[in-house]
Image (cartoon, rainbow, N blue to C red):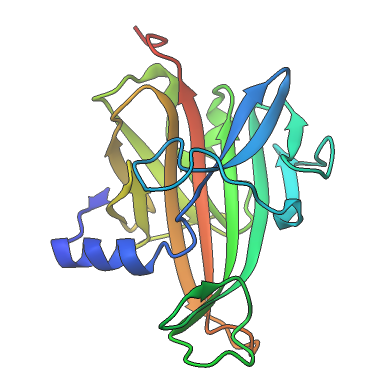
Amino acid sequence: MHRPLPPLALLLASLLSFPVLAHDLWLEAEKGALVLYQGHRHSAHAGSDQEPYDPAIFQGARCGSTLVQPLSRSYPLRFAGDCPRLQLSLSSGYWTKTPWETRNTPKTGVSGVLKSWRSEERLTRLGRWDKQLAQPLGEGLEVLPASDPFSLKPGEKLLVRVFDGGKPAADVAVAYGDSTRGSTGPDGSINLRLRHWGVQLISASRETPLDDGKADRLVRSATLQFDLPQGAAQ
């Protein structure tokens, strides 16, 4: 199911629902490992191709249902490269927006606060396909394909589903190709037309109230990554 957003809702969703997605996070295969990068290599947003991050953003990782650790704790984070579904849990912490700047800090003691939030991100990279990979691991927000994405090519549609706590999540804005493409239907699904070869990044985000005194909202995002080498499906 696909529930298109009207133009104004699309604009609001892109401005408000994705405040922590100014930089993409993705995993890149290098010398038998999967390396976590951040930047604008796979988007049209202004900014550096690659931007450093604090390795302390790492909160946990799973290869399927098995807990795994990075190969090292230094930047950039590296993980074993033979995992069919590697899922990373990350957090860049608290953010506070004022009329003058946006700071990576709690709102406590900050003047002129317009908005504050805590950011939590989940990145799921599929390395190959198995029908079991369409099922959620059951923790937090997840974006997963309903069928084999590696069999597709640009111009074809992929049905993806958004889950929260293992259950379908309705009315969640989904972004692909630098813009919000719509929101999920009652069964948590949305159809997206793939636009290009290479790295595919499909993201969803949810905001909920937060009453810890450090921020007003909790912003959880989830990104699905899979790669389509040019000509692979031809």
